[in-house]
Image (cartoon, rainbow, N blue to C red; front, top):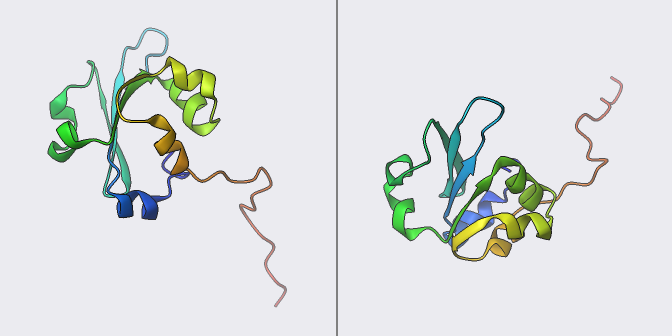
Length: 119
């Protein structure tokens, strides 16, 4: 999500996101407190469900969007832009479509490496 985030528009609009992600896999129970602040996506892994202290002070009450859910639902909702997965997320404040509008979709044939011109 950090790669796809259009940080210039996010920062220009003052968009702030607060995400509580359940990243539990197998026997390990973990959570991620993720946020967008000043156009940068940050996160912190915690053993317990994130609390206010896991987010920067400005995000605690002023977030544009507050959302929580599982890692897979976040991936499907924001990366795959699946509206069915978006409905599985718990949105306590704001509109998740606004976040999707700040994500850049790369074409499948995006050139990671291009041939070097011969010298």
